[in-house]
Image (cartoon, rainbow, N blue to C red; front, top):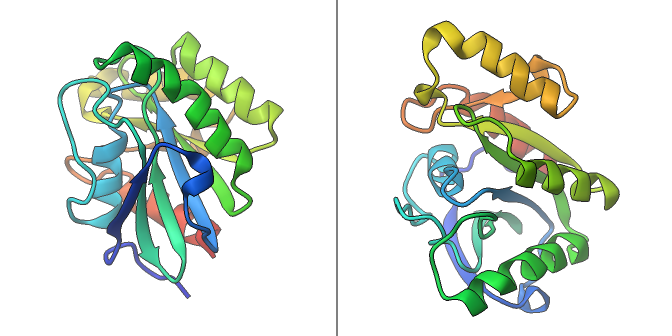
Length: 193
């Protein structure tokens, strides 16, 4: 039984979904470029395993982290504005879709949105696509430290309403000070089993 993500380690990076090794179960992370997916993975694991950059588009592959017992965390390239070679950027969308739609061991997608910016049209498209593919996902608002405390409750309600979920279903997290991380970690461990 997997009870922690603390022993999670980098396993591999791949650009072709069909070459990713089989897993017992896995959770993938999606979101706009520079929304904080890699920082979130590091916070969930309690140590730095995913490369974090201030420049959008640094995650260019399917990055796989082994949590143990055949369970994976998977960091996917961001969608939207990114810096990088055009031929690579154009490949990311089909690569992400092929990965998410082909993995029989995929248990959940953590869809990361910027708490301060709020959901974008690209986030809406991703949520629509995940629903159309019948892929389970949870919405996680990152960078909550950027939201003024006086506006936090209202912003949380706004983000939740956008995705047609209750505020209690929305994971409201801050990777820097660990706010909300324990609840999301518990959910991930539960679905990885």
